[in-house]
Length: 344
Ligand code: FUB
Image (cartoon, rainbow, N blue to C red):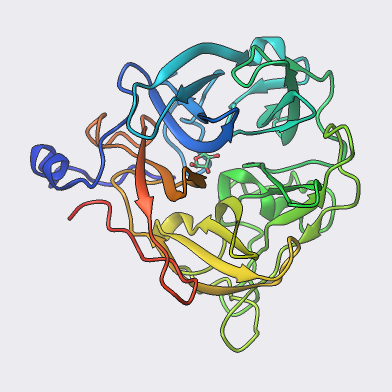
């Protein structure tokens, strides 16, 4: 994830044109996963810090060490920081890089799902449990068996089943798992091991969770994202193909799979008829924000739909120092989503 030149950006002007402001300003926060629990909005973001790591295309500068949980009584009310919910030092198997998390609730217990690099430098996905939505969360001793890559998002379907979506290319390492085992060989370039431009793009994964939400109940399956003609999106189709940041929500009985296109900086989506897909590509939800990454969640609150996302406006464009924002999301009558421009 390279630093892109921000010299040309007039941040005063950009902030005036922004459709929303950072909701947290005392910390840098990113990758917001939002849920409504007990009538309140809870946000589970990454906690961005500057740990001094050099920038590279594998995202080494995203060196986060802990998570804070935030809550809001209403969509425009004060945002409460509940403090450190989980620290990497308390996770036995994890060494570093606490990237984008998600959470969910089952039978009065709250589960934080998070990716981190283990001591072999391989991203795995862990679970931590609390009696409260804001933690502190007690981590399991081991990551989820068979988990790999980044950006877990756990969707609860209306029948009470939970599904984890995950995966991310480049620094998220998905391209190193193409044979089913981690390919640790050289080169370390983020684009090594990716399919050719005229081959189908790498796909995110989904697995139904076990009843206790601590393991996969099945081998993860690929989530197919198809074009209008029913063909898999190609690796060279960089404005539409999956890169990272999976999220699933349900609207009018349809399943919406949304994700970031990474190096082209869009949040896009497809619609399907069941949690496994396939999902047919429908369009863009969010145009590029300031900062390299784009990552979001979608959540209904009091009958309206909201996009939780981030940009790097507060840090004046520093890639790894991002801030969570919220904007209302609108649907067209045919179920498609109206594209948001983050700056007017
Ligand atoms: O925050 C670190 C990584 O950046 C996330 O896991 C990605 O989705 C991207 O936002």
